[in-house]
Image (cartoon, rainbow, N blue to C red):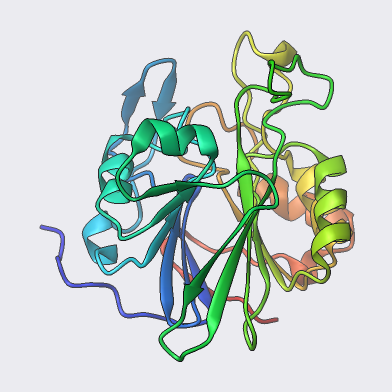
Length: 268
């Protein structure tokens, strides 16, 4: 039986739960991004192949949930939705906030929200653009590929600046983020080269391994933590591909990857 006691906090560290789901303990705050806690099984046209390394009851003390988009089960499944809606605050896209209600606040690209930290400082969360498919993919009336998605940049005095990519496949967008935000100390990159039959000639709708390494190089971050590369059948590139891609790019030293459920430092 799962324990209901909160997992001890590890300030300045990150834990990848599985799929895209990541826990960031930063500035005395506990942040969970893109919660997916369901057991393996089908979700419409997507199939979950692995359960979470840590169950959601261990993160009941969450201060903030980040949801890059609510449209796809691999980023926001049933138990993840229940977890997010029970949180004190949920930051997500403007469209998702309208659909979810409750604690959800919608942010458009470059909008910010600031939280007070337990030490009296502040943590500022900036929503940043994401393109959930190829650059030349068909766009809707709002200019979105696939659906509205945001990433997030977390920053505060005395804290590492962390970029959480969300489902973004665009290096052009990564370049814009690097230009507008300044130095990034650590990234959580949604990789896995997700491919969906019938969409975009099955080209990736998230970063493939080579583009993940390129994103790390563009941002110049000394710590790069991949997520979203295992746990669902439509993820097509796993840990081995990421390690090879970063190695081929001469970036092995900035890749920070471990078994899910392992705390990883945001500092080199």
